[in-house]
Length: 211
Ligand SMILES: [Zn+2]
Ligand SMILES: [Zn+2]
Ligand SMILES: [Zn+2]
Image (tube, rainbow, N blue to C red; front, side):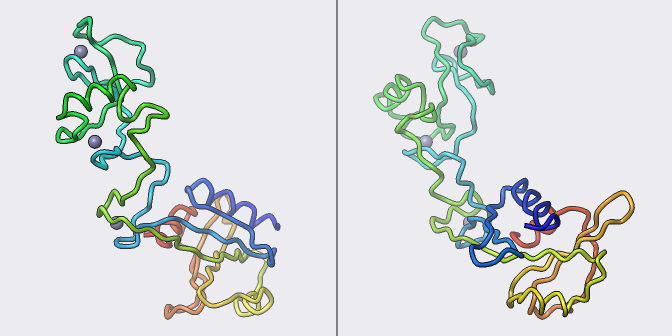
């Protein structure tokens, strides 16, 4: 992999984008992101949802005695209420969730240190879109090429020599004294195919490719 491609590779990884190098080509990257089928929002695979009501995990602890909330990373501290029955558990924050309204289920989840306790069977990977509630997701993918404009290459020559296919993304990279400027086109789109270096980071390009 050439250096320009490599630096873009890690810039995408830093933006939570999955990046691959295609088996049959060395001059491009394959990037993709799981998105909601309905609204196109990022699908957060690392988030957990409540098995009972689908509420997402807010990574907080609640006192089983007084309800006080703590955003701590361990449950060994004691609640300010100092009630002897007090335990801090990772509970579901939806007040209407059956894990909060049904005393039997509430007791069961408290024994297991809360709905969102590590390894608890009361939570599962996010099954719905946190933006619209949609239940379907899909991968949005792009083939990405990087053209270092400082090498003086001509765009149409670059497209031809790299066998760039329609709908691929070509990222332009230019060293401007102290910093790097980027631009991009989606090859074959209706927009004018010109080299316009208006971005100072890959994250701005990611925001446009995966809106
Ligand atoms: Zn719940
Ligand atoms: Zn308490
Ligand atoms: Zn959605």
